[in-house]
Image (cartoon, rainbow, N blue to C red; front, top):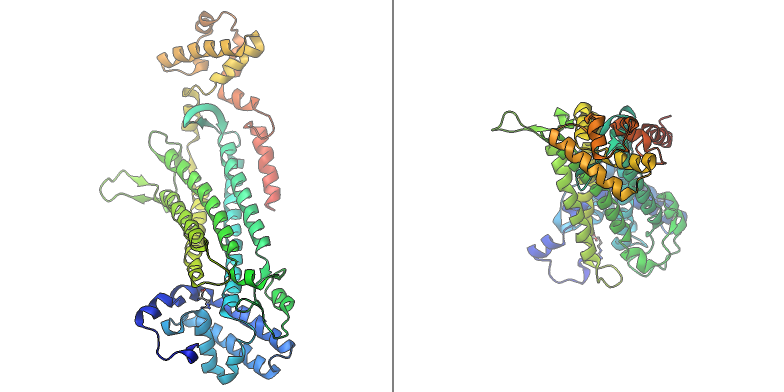
Length: 457
Ligand code: ARG
């Protein structure tokens, strides 16, 4: 394709280091779509004849059929998907194939193809996140009033509802979707027609190709058009943030599924057994989601370092943009599906969750608040009195509201029978009815809003 000025061919090492076809063949659909848009524009502008354009377009369709049926052939001599396709086109339609590359370069071609690919990856992430949200709101609706311990420092803090806890992840997924949507809006400028770096002397219509490929507009600067990979970096930052959320959720399931917690039984379909310990059911899918987030962070780091310090415009380093993005996208799709399945299929052991909240003295703050409100005791003193009550209950291995009134009054005479209404975990969560709080009524309201936002109602 470029042999004109060369006396000798590339060495085996050169061919190997140069070839991107083993991975960029994943761009074949985008490459054919962009070529079809380009040749239709070339014909409309009178740059190639209608006859040649028709031959090129039907040749590209035939190649798409071949790729779909048999995969893309990997010929290292042809370097990349652009040359593999163009050379096949020449085999199919003859010399007219050579007119396709008028007024473009592989530099604007690859930037365009990759943007189209990333745009599809964003749509796929959005669909996966939506499915996760549906699973979360469904389970949150079932468990709007199921009590569990809420933690800070992974120490029992105050009772919350399981629905509230699950809806926290719904909010994270909502932010992830909005970040991906921002990224999609910003990538919507088409590089095609930037040519190698400087634009072209041919009378091309960049608006037309941008529109045909579903972009909002052409890129405004040809140097930037061919060398911008912000969209890929931005996609990866969105993927990283999303994968961190998935990793945190996975970690919750891993902890909850451990025997000392026993808050959840994971679906068999997303667990594995041990070859030596017959009693074991391991949360491997959740652990791999947690692990894969590290690889997605690595993908972002890889592309950041590749791009750092590259002068304008295209440099071959940029060929290394694809592998990390492809890897991150496929890992993210898998992780989203695994976590949706886990949320859908988990059996929540609400009796144990509730018992853990009761025995963890999660309502100690409620006792202190009651002393402040009902007995007009300063909070610091109330905190001290409550500590004594917790110590006593703990020494007997019972819940706070199982302490007899006489014992509570021995700690502080101002405590009355009315305190028990505040000490139950149900009273505690019901009292936290501030907007966004854990009260079942608040959780139900947020679930109802979320179902409308998801188009489920
Ligand atoms: N395979 C190349 C890449 O992925 C395509 C662009 C090559 N351009 C060039 N001038 N060698 O970046």
